[in-house]
Image (cartoon, rainbow, N blue to C red):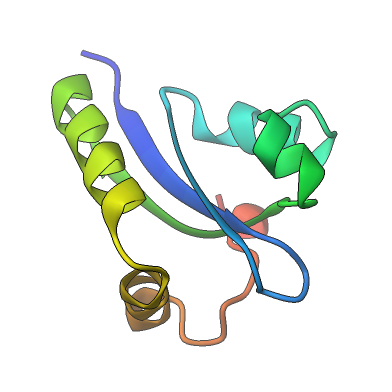
Length: 94
């Protein structure tokens, strides 16, 4: 079974967050970086991968994406900084 990913993007100033899901994380982030992502991500220039989770089951990934989309922004920032304290773009490390 193919892995799925839930990811969070942010802009350079770290003022806006976007939660998404994909089965090909590298390709999806490249799309975002090239301005081919979602309308919301394009509008707010969200190109930096600041957090991601990997799942073996797509249904778990879908459930987690829905959960994170309903979280308060502060909860998302706490999640991000727990594993990425410098809030750096994680894409170069993929």
